[in-house]
Image (cartoon, rainbow, N blue to C red; front, side):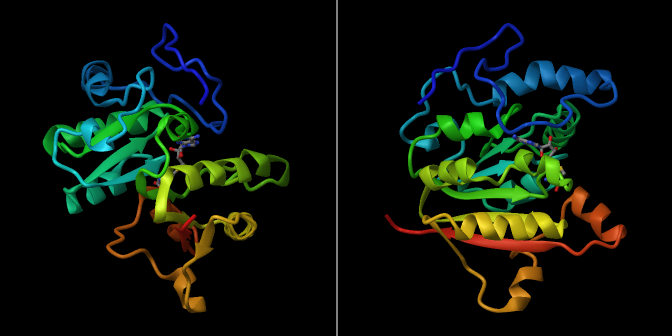
Length: 240
Ligand SMILES: C[S@@+](CC[C@H](N)C(=O)[O-])C[C@H]1O[C@@H](n2cnc3c(N)ncnc32)[C@H](O)[C@@H]1O
C-alpha cells in the first residue's frame, strides 16, 4: 500500500487520483466554518494511521457491517441510510467543502455514532481500507463527465473496480445510480469486463427500479426535473 503523510493543510500528500471537481463553493456561514474546523476533525478517519483490522473500532456505536458512500454531496442519502441501519458503520466521503458543511449541520441536530467522514478523494480511503472489510459501496450520481474527452475522469474505471473488489467482502454489494445513459453503459461494460463482479438484475425493469428504501438524492431530483431517467445498478462481489 502507498504510504501517506499529512500536508500542512491537513490533506494527504498522495496525489488525488479520481477527483476533478470543485473543492469549494460559496463562502461558508460562520457556523458551518466552525463545524468544518471543530467537528470534522473528530469525525474524519485518520489515514495517517493504519486502518484497524476490525473496522468496528472506528465507531463509537456497536456496529457489525460496513458501508462506504463515495461523493455524498449534501449527505441526505448518507444521513438517511445511517439512521436506517444503526448496526452498520458508515464512512462517507465528500471533498466539496460546502457539501461536507451541509452534512455536519444536519448532524448537529441528528448525531450519528455509526458514521465517520473523509473530505478528499475516495481512492485514498479505498487504498487505506483492509481487504474484504466492506459490505457495500454506494456511488450515487458520480460526476457524469458526459464529454468523450473527459470519460477517463469517471470514477468507474478498471483501477477503481479493482479497489472495490479488494475492499468488498465476498457477496458485498456495489450500487451505482446515474441519469447519464453513456455513464450507465460505460459502467455496465466496465463491470462486465471485471472478473470479480456480477450484475444482479433479473428483469429489464430492474434497471429503472430504485434501490430498496431509496429516498432519492438532490442531484437525482434535479435530473428528473430536467427530464432524465435514472438507472440503478446493483453488482455483487463474487467469491474468490
Ligand atoms: C454529481 S454529485 C452527486 C452528489 C450526491 N451523491 C447526490 O446524488 O446528490 C457528485 C459528487 O461526487 C463528489 N466526488 C467527485 N469525485 C470524487 C472522489 N474522487 N471522491 C469522493 N467524492 C468525489 C463531488 O464532489 C460531488 O459532490
